[in-house]
Length: 512
Image 1 (cartoon, one colour):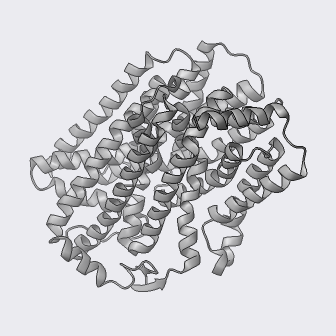
Image 2: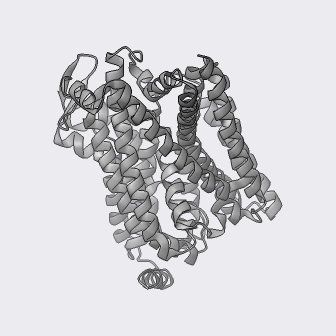
């Protein structure tokens, strides 16, 4: 155990220090608020692709997804991954380039800016609603990341969960506050590399210790419903439950969320050259498919290692620690593997930090730029704007820590709800804003409100009826928002000529 308590902490501390150093270095490049929140639109294709996907995957990739696969087999994990892979590709294909052009055309540096400026919202109602929704859903989303960090350190070193969570939050705040968007983006690139190393290391080690790929597949076949895509293993009854067509469609609906994720969409707005989007799309799509497939297989490996008494049996929220338990076992097999295990733990941190930093920036910009300066017309010079941005970022992080105080909270469940919230409120509005010239401000407001209300209504009321109603809330909420946008836009006045001409000029530039 000496390797665990000496080598692993050194590896993790070195990684955390590197993140803070990057934040300090990039702090010198923040000359104004636009640089702090959007990096001056200077991201290259590789950084754009990998920072977008690293900020997307969060701790869900190395904890939530393997945990679901470990306990229930391939159905839910695989259909979720398929939906996300398709959603990733379509988001890059349809949204990225057009949003890059449109956001610059209307002078937007945040998502609320874009919606407000796209529809020439002079009284800033649309901006205020968008910013408020970002705050509502990003605070618990950020909390899930802090919770993942707390679980990681409490499991590895038997630290107090709350102490570990606070330390992690402080590090994330430190480099994000100092370096802003550029620091978040370049650290995300590094973090995506560390995440990749973590996934490869665990799968190579796990396969060798479990007795090979054939042994892992044979074990999976021996479990009722474990390898099926139309059945799911129920660990409580040790039997297979049906995983029907409606459930599959519901699970794949995760992919719809991409069209409305502010921390991903911001990367599209920040890419330096709109013509490099195709390169970014290819990099992002390939990485996402491979990383999710590997994460699912790690869950399969963990299940066999449990049967072999290599790692303890994990139930309930504990199943999300399967990769942690495997890495701890790895650390007991020599100095080199202890260092590799340290990188794995750094990879789990990377998953969390790469999402949390982006979420904190998006939430901070919503409060300081859009609510204070946009809606309430608070006059702030550049220096005060930067100070306000950082102060708001800290406040949001503290709220995230408070929400994550419950150690029994599930990373997967919190991320699932926040993902549905953003996907339903912003996704349909984003697609309408970019592709439907007849859409208007009233339709956009109606779509956001309808989507947001339906997410809560379906999750906490309708889904409890069970049966056909027990589907992922994102799907019905997304459809409800789209219908609201179409009906209200057609029932109210058409957009002014200035708005439609702007739309046409963007479309022409995109196709150049």
